[in-house]
Image (cartoon, rainbow, N blue to C red; front, side, top):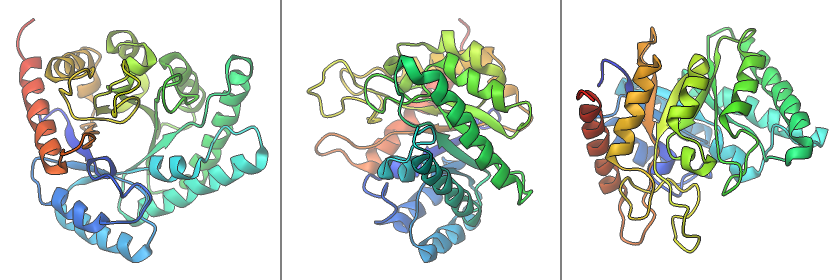
Length: 306
């Protein structure tokens, strides 16, 4: 498994309450840094400069690969990279530029990006052009440093929870095709938990996106019962009753990724679990152990013939 990928964990989902950039960030990050199962970690917004310095010190000791996710900052502040108001869009671009600076302070090799809200069919084409323009501004800003920082755009749901522009695989492909020729450090990230929310499957989407796919997330979702506390894009534990993802689905995802060359990259891709305690009585450490068992078992199953 480790020969094929760097196995990551999304820090701010594993320990809810730190998405706003405050809370026991360093304390919880230390637990992940001390766990040798993980070889990569995805961190988010850390408001305080001194806490970011402490986090960087931990990460330097850990030998973990580091990704920086803009989702906490962007979603908490409702920033939108494809906003039709130029002033609001400029605020979103500046927020990501500041995230690029934070990512560098934390020693990250890649920054995760997200699109803003989907405006609907009538103005979707216009929104995609605005998103491309915003992403170009961000990539140009990052290129000034010349350190080779990479970027991935994450695909979210469009109709159930986040309701983002990107979105379905065909729209993500349009963005990648517009940017990738000039910006080879830009790619896409798909999340296993989002396929059911998008009414798509890995078998359909991965072959379409394979040439632009740089990273993936492993997660679960629960969306068939609106009254359920895990309804929407919440990333509950694997195997949650009524959920969409458990070991067989992760194993199948690994098979599809392997069949489409995802694990044949010159540098091993980051494959991160994005899970969190949701129901009363659930504990982060147990949810993390659940994820580790599922990843190990799913990888083993994916190697079996047939």
